[in-house]
View 1: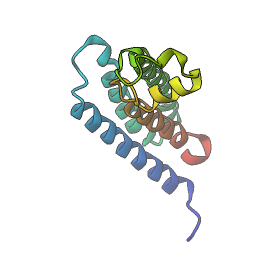
View 2 (view 1 turned 180 degrees about the vertical axis):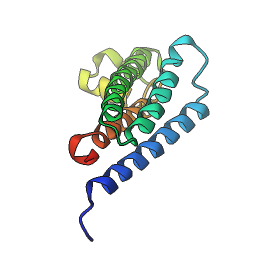
View 3 (view 1 turned 60 degrees about the horizontal axis):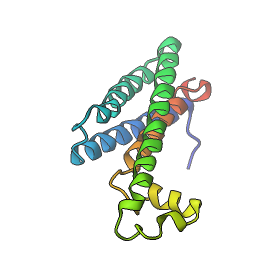
View 4 (view 1 turned 60 degrees about the vertical axis):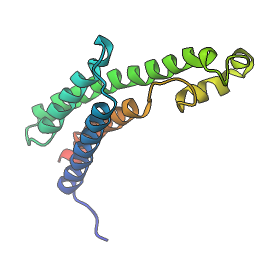
Length: 148
């Protein structure tokens, strides 16, 4: 297999970005992620990601720079989402019938792992994690080497 040049590598990264964005939108729709104010920021982050993907496909360096900054902002928002989902699941630990008597006695690493893997609590961490990945794909696609 031949070596990919910068343009086809960037196109591939952008295609992965669109795939990640579409999958994340589908997951949020399936989860009906719009019932409270705090469920709206991911939708704004998804819109920003779509805008960043469009800018990243343009030839101008200024467009790619703006796309990179937007993607970094989305990454920060998505990482906050990962944190809040894990934290919400962690807080649900003592309320879960399987853990109510033992939650506080479990090692911290076990409690965190259980919360992060949705072994306890209702909050899915995967959608936020997918948004982090999608935004970082935009960052990679707008890098100097991939864009040249």
